[in-house]
Length: 357
Image (cartoon, rainbow, N blue to C red; front, side, top):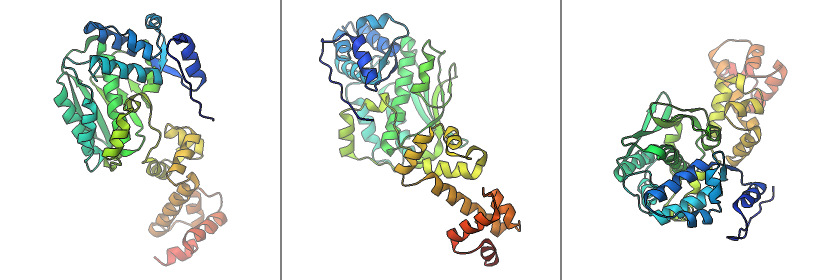
């Protein structure tokens, strides 16, 4: 699809029309107006006027009174940046103590030298806890899953939802940026009741989402904690020019995808009969699966062949099962096609390979 740039001149178009233009150019309005309302309430708490920030974000004040209204990710980015600068608070009023402009950049810089993501996230949580005592962040692992947990230690009142969503998405965005990888979530738990715009959480967080949880946390495969960091100070300086993209837009690349595909092919053959089944099991579209594998220098067919080869070799070495049975177990329709493929993989027939053990 051809990329297009939409240039908007301040004051020349009404916000409703701008939103239509943004949507028509691929900028879908999916962010709840409740998050904009929360920022406006932060202005009210400080006795400040949000009009200039709303204008910069091309959001009409009348939109604030429409409970089901949505804004685009770009408008959310514009509004957040303007509000952070005007309020001199990167926390946007969530906490009793302001977080001056540059606070979150400092947290990222402190994590850059970590040997892997696990150490970096542990540092991030520890240092964030030094910035505010209104919430506590923690990284934990259990049963193969990693959890970024958020515990409230002071009442967040009407800013609870906005604070929780922003802090968790920011932590996830930083983790993705540090590793240059998408980190798909296995689940999200939130310590508040479902809001009227609960349907938007399908966009905010992938995977299942549970409300009214004991505390808030994101969960993902603990294997990502072992990924090395791929960023340096120069990359940090570039990122900080538009740091809010880490929060408002999802990361695309998944550096553990190849291993997850191999594992699914080997352990869950019932979910990998074809690309559509496998992609659905991994919470992806088939098109995204193929594209991301290509970005990692792999293909689904290559991975299928590798898993079939390893499984066949293991069965030939460990068991006395007939060749015909092994062929069926690794996904071949007949013995002849399996023998041809096996010789192409190893240079030997299955019988020759078994005899040489």
